[in-house]
Length: 179
Image: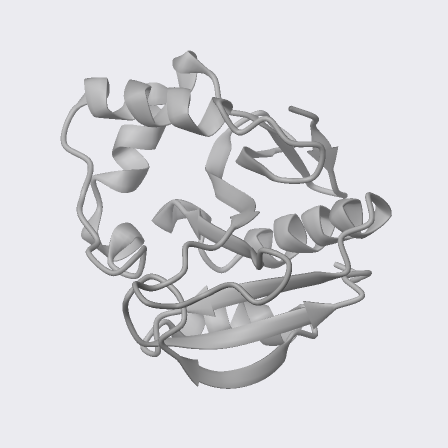
């Protein structure tokens, strides 16, 4: 998987050496509470290593799951660009929808890292021909919705199309955002 850079960040593939950080990140309810229909905290280093292996298995010219690192090399979070799982009973009537998502360590909140990392990935994806990206947010996840607005994404309203739950949906068409 490729690396993506921005002014202050490097997005790179997850490595086994990142397991302690990933466990620290995803053992926190405040970080994972909005991830998927049935969020759960990570419990063990073995779980972190298994998750890193799954993240590294994404082998696609556009999609990926990246570790977000600051310029000093410290890990700050996770960013993904991948197909969105449809809810049960939903049919795909066109190309597979692609989502962008992020979660950062609480120590990294409030520094603009999510917006900067997402903008860099959206620019990279646009350069590789991806013309539409969605963000699927829990209705109570106001912080991620604010990132979507800073990215210039359009609010499409509530949906049950993804993840077997109610979400607020945002769309980025053209995906050529400035950080």
